[in-house]
Length: 75
Ligand SMILES: [Zn+2]
Image 1: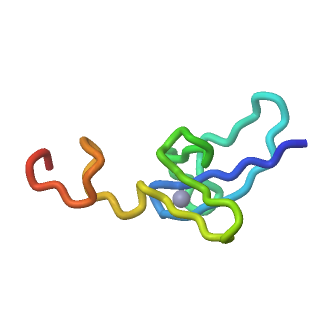
Image 2 (image 1 turned 120 degrees about the vertical axis):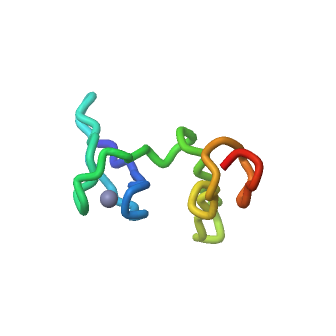
């Protein structure tokens, strides 16, 4: 059975969830936030195999309108 990783954008926590069929979680188990996304390619998450480190491109971004980590033009 598949286990997917999810990231909550509300409390910045990652969690794993067993998924049966289409029963994907739509809220965070920690804060019940609705801003969760699956850690695959959906939210710009990059998982680097081998080093054991994961890098989330969304974590340091303060701008949702562009890819910049610090954006003064579209905030
Ligand atoms: Zn949360």
